Structures are given as structure tokens and as C-alpha cells.
Image (cartoon, rainbow, N blue to C red; front, side, top):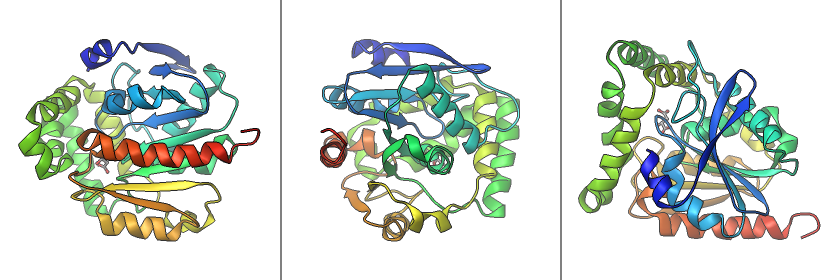
Length: 282
Ligand code: MLT
């Protein structure tokens, strides 16, 4: 989805991270935020946040391995590997101070692994429309079948499977152009990258037992009409994390940052301001 970036004057650039290149937006200055997109999208799903949040903070919005302009790798792209990619990206961008990681859905799965593996690099976490449980055997089997189909037929079947689940009724009625843009993003992604992420999500661990051990500021956000990660499920996640804040975004399905950017941005700006005030030396 190159055009929205161009229209907003945001330049994505390629950064070498080990064996691969990650495409990333790096804009603004101050406390660093990393925005981690969902499946099967790319950084452009954060366009309504990049513009606004980069007025106050340094916003880093990468395309994960296999998505957008980043290198696609064969086989399985695990959530752990994607988390390690992000840590290596921060090294390459010379970000030494802890970041606030904001992950939506698959980006949340990556955020959980980032916390497990790179805790000292985190100042706070925002978990949007995501799940702590692993796939059921049936769900994992479905992902394996879809990965096979994607490799054989391209990303059309993934777009057909995902788009109807991503948006609430408000967006369907009020913003078909936005939904069409998301569909085009999905179709433009690499079949290999999408298949690798499907296999990685199917293999992901259940992190529910980790939640009571979180010791950093955490905000959980969910769309009121999210059918993938429901309000009840997200509330249960928030209740298990000590001191966690919980916000339900009205008039939104799974894609809260795109469907109701005003409410999403307000929730996240308030959280970031509180986290920044508690930052040493602030
Ligand atoms: C996402 O939005 O990243 C997906 O819904 C995650 C998933 O399929 O589990």
C-alpha cells in the first residue's frame, strides 16, 4: 500500500537486519514507540496513528518479515523470530532506550514474545485486538490448509477469508473505500510471506500463564464489535495483567486503529502521556 505513505509524506526505508531487510517508517523524536501490524497487512494500517503520534514521539512502524516491503522467508515465520527481528531492527536504528510496543492481533502475538525475550527493551505495552491463547488443533489445521492454498493460488483466498472478519458493521456501511484499500494491501503481499506467518501463528504458544507476571504499564484495547478477539476475551486478558488499563473502542470491529482512529488515538495518547511522565528524567 505505497500511495497512502506518499500522500502523507512519510517515507518508508529498508533496513538490513541479519539475513533480511525490513521496510520501516521511522518518524518523529522523543520516547520511541514501535507499531506492529496485524495479519495479513503491513505498516500502512497505522497511517492514522503515524501522522498524529509522530508529532510527540518517535514512531517506528515496520513491515514484519514476509509483509509489505520486507523480505519474505520460506517455511515458518515464528512469532519468536519476528520478535527477534524487531529487537535487531532497534539495534540497527540505534534505539537504546526502552520502547512502548503497540501490537495488533498478530502484532500482539509478536509483542508477547518480545516481552518474553527482550523485556529490558520495553517501557510499556499496548495490546490491541489480540489473543493470549494458542490455536485449537482445528484452527491450526485450518491455517495449514490456508497456507497451502496461498502458496498454490496467491493471496486471494486469504483476503476472502480475512476481510469479512476484520471490520465492524459501521465501517462496512460508512467506509467501503478503506475496506477496499485493506483488501488491496492483502492482495499485494507475498504468498510465501503470508503462508509462513500462517504456519507461525498456528505454532504459537499459549501465553496466558505469563500475564500475571507482567510488570510494566500495559493498555489493552478492543473494538466493541471485534469477532476475532472479543471484548470478553480481551477483558479477561486485561484482568490477568497487574494494573492493566482496558479500553473498548465504540463503532469498531477488529481494526480499531483504522475503524475509529479518533477514539483509538485518544486512548493511546492518554496512556503514552502517563508512561512518559513516569519515564526516568522526564
Ligand atoms: C490478525 O489480525 O493479525 C489476525 O486476525 C490474527 C489471527 O489470525 O489470529
